[in-house]
Length: 567
Ligand code: ADP
Image (cartoon, rainbow, N blue to C red; front, side, top):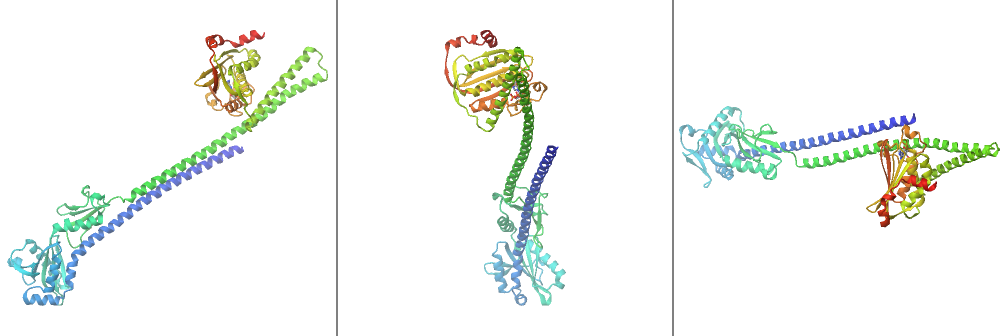
C-alpha cells in the first residue's frame, strides 16, 4: 500500500519536473526569440533615424546657401540693384564661394523688373574669375524654367512673406532664390543656381550614403536606393548585388521641398551581432536541452534503481521466509528422528539405519544451506579470498563429476565429456573452482525434466580456457537471462517453482569466477537447454601427442564408464 503511494508520488514528481523543465525550455525559447526581435527592431529603428538624419543633412546642405545670404542686409542689395542693376560686391563674393562647391555649376541673376526669358533678352551670368556678373544671351533653358517657377511661387506668397529670401527648387535641376526687400514686400531679383545633378548623385549623395551605410564590398547593414519615381529609375544604390524590390523596402524618405521626384528607399539587413546572439542562443538551448535530458535521465534512473531495490528487498524477504522454512524442516526431521532413537522407540535395526540416514541427509542439507549462506555473506562483505594455484581443469572436473555422479545417476543422467587433450593449466582457487562446477552441475540436475543429459566440454582458444556445462533441461526464458546472476533471483515460472532454491547459487558462481579472473556467460533456449561457459586465462600448456591422437577415445559416455568401474 505504502509502496504504491510512493510509486504514485514518484511519478507525480517526475511528471511535474518534466513539465517544469519543458516550461523553462519553452520560456527560454520565447525569451531568446524576443531578444532577437528586440535587437532587430532596435537596430532597424537606429538605422531609420540615420536615414532621417541623412535626408535632413542633404536639406541643410542646400538650405545653407540662402541662409548665408541672410547675413547680407537687404537694404544693401536693394540699393546696389536699384543703382546699377547689379548685386553688391559682398554678395558676389558669397556667390563665388557658393560656386566653389561642385554641387552648383553656374549662377544667374535677374532683377524682378525684367523678364529676359519672355523677351529673349540678355541675362546676368556669374563669372568665377572676375567674381562678378556679366550679361549674356547664352543661357540654358532650365534657367528660365527655374525663374518661372520662382516668379509664380512669389506671386502667391508675396502678400504675407516677411523673410529676406525664398528658395524654390526646380526638382534637381536648379535652386532659385528670390532676394526680398521685406519693408516693401517686394522681390529685388532672382538668383538661379544650376545644380550639377551628376555630381549631386554620384559624388555628394554617394559619398554620404557610403560613409553612413557602407558599400556592397563591405556587406553593408543598410541598402539604400536613390530612386527617381517619375522616371522609375534607380539613380544610385550602395548595394548593386540587391535589386530594388519595393516589397522589401522598410523605410521611404523624401527630400522635403527639394529634389521633388526623388526618394530614398532603404532596406535594413540583419544586424551583424544577430549571428552572435543566435550562436549564444543556440549554445544556451543546447545546454538547456542537455541538462533537461540529464535531469530526465537521472529521474528515470532514480525511479529504476528504487524499483530495483524494491525488488531486491522483496526477494530478500521471500528468501528469509524460505530460509527459515528450509532450516526448520531438516531440523524438525533431525529432532524427531533423534528423539525416537534417544527414547529407544525404534528397535528394528533397519529402521534405526533409516533414521540414521534421515539424520545424515538432513544434516547434509543443512550444511550445504549454511555453506551457501556463508558464501553469500562473505562475498557481500568482500571477505572471500582466492588462494589460486596452478590446476588442470580436466582433473578437477573429473573429481567433481565423480562426487556428483551418485546424484546424476539417481536421476538417470547421460553424462558426456569432451575434454581438451593437451595438459593445460589455469590459476584458480581449488575450492572455488569445485563450488562453481558443482553448482552448475547441480543446476543442470535441478532444471532438467524430460531429457537428462549433461555434456561437459573443455577447450583452448587463443590463450583462453573455456569450460562448458551444457544440459537439455527446461532452459531459461530470454527475459530472465540478464537476471539469473543476481542475488535471490529465480525465474518465475511453474517449472522453476517445482524445484527448491533460493536464487543464490549463480550469484556465488559469478562472484567466485570473477574473483579468479574468469568470466561466466550463459546461452539458453527455453524448453531446449542451457549452456554455461566459463572462461579463464590459460597459464601453461604441455602438448600431449598421445592424448591428442586418442581424442575420440576420451569423448566418452562418462557415466557408463564410471558406473562400471565403481560397481
Ligand atoms: P536456485 O537454483 O537456488 O534458484 P541459482 O542462482 O542457482 O538459484 O539460479 C537462479 C535461477 O536460474 C534459477 O532459479 C533458475 O530459474 C535458473 N537456472 C539456473 N541454472 C539453470 C539451468 N541449468 N537450467 C535452467 N534454469 C536454470
